[in-house]
Image (cartoon, rainbow, N blue to C red):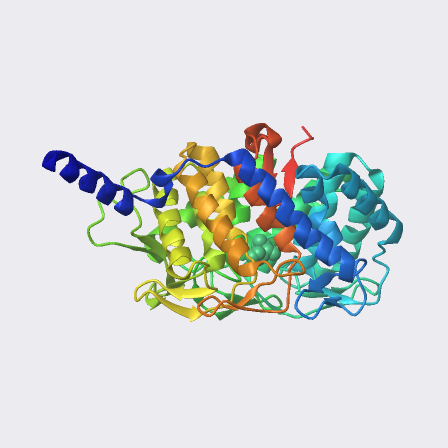
Length: 464
Ligand code: DMJ
């Protein structure tokens, strides 16, 4: 009797201390249905209050058009999600609305990077899904209007361009904005047989890479007229993040060996200088063992390699996915565990987090997808059920804290959970899409046959 009691206590203690993913089995199909229902809740909120506008402000139930007049940000960015999640009727109606009403003949100065990843990428993927040539024509027209952005002395793109006049402006940019264009522009070239898009975007990426420091790192801000860095802090976070993502992905999507070489060289330097690893870590080489949960990527000066900050954040959570895509599963797993720890600290991840002292530096959470994206990619790469359980936890926290009576709202502060009056289009384009793909049957989308843009628009290589 005493023995049985002791055994019971022992088993209970094991259960209580067991990691979250061993405690219960994840019902994928139930979760996929729940994701669909929540996606619809957000989409219907947008439709009810802001149909035809760019974005919904869910708390005040008002709308925001980025440039004073709408370029249908949310519908275009969300369209491929509508198809992928199986809302075909809704998707077809939205597609018809877009092709009838969207015009880029507007006297507005737009941010090239945001328009490329949300609108150009959205149009291209939806064209690939539906074969609707009007979507490709819109993408081609938009691409042409954006091209003057590359007319700088260096070939690095200006930040803004007027869609009607072609006047480019804003000469202080960053690697994310100069280097996250090739998947979308490159694909547009392949689909239209106009090499100019590929060539300009590729040059912008190469010109960014060429300006790396002697240590092989890039800085945060660069003057596109002079090619000189104006801020020399190096990291994998805001303003740099997707530059690395596209170095890898342009080699995968286009088979571009120059991309591959730039990626190989860059990622080695990122590991050498940015990685902040536990002292008791074993053999931190590319193929070696990394102590689980003991890996972070912080900030250093690009020229000296001296550490400037021990911060990470919600945006950085894309990096485990990129590492997994490259086959570096040891690091990917370790970093994902770190990111999940950051998420668990407050049940939602903050925008900026000091990993050394475990403190929130900037507590905003604008509904970002990156941690979900990495969870999905890691699950696909390993089939380890731990990532399903991790995704379930993230999804439940996300719904609990960000669901609003109308749609979804970001958080002003992850510690207080106070909401903020904004729903970015990437909630529907990315966050819900990655949640869905994580839980949906694997056949929903063959991850090996697509490359996801940084805005989660899957692109298929349909060309030779
Ligand atoms: C998205 O627009 C893209 O994923 C971009 O690369 C980074 N920021 C948001 C999501 O957080």
